[in-house]
Image (cartoon, rainbow, N blue to C red; front, top):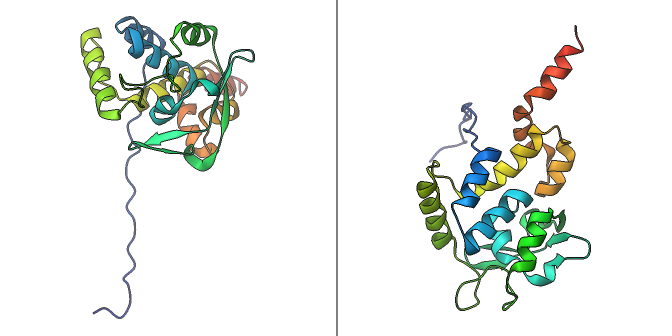
Length: 195
């Protein structure tokens, strides 16, 4: 009906609200949980893995000698696919995560699985996370907030934004730059050089 498409100017929208758990809130969440849940929360908070990457993890992805894990799968809506951006990445593990993994039973190819040895489902896991947050007196957060918490806490400790980008598996540094606003101490040091 129209001879040509009208020019539509996109409106600027305010930046999305950014939420993350502090180190203290992260500890409260882990202490308020047990079993699979505390193990999954610990892994998420100390590796920055996406939820789909956590539930796709297999024992073969863990190198206990090198203390690293390899992210080479992701489960999205119940389908196992390659990681986001098709980027396989290696994530070093903390001693807490190594110890947690060593204590888990290796009775299934997946590290985290249901009673039938199938990968966990998002709906069940988000309900448990919300329930544990409520019991712990924390605001309700989603699984992606645990990933944000990992990155935000690294940024607040003066770590390289490039290193954080690699740990998160971002393909573009601009995505990782969202966490740089948290690093107020570094910004103050930079401004202090003007004195």
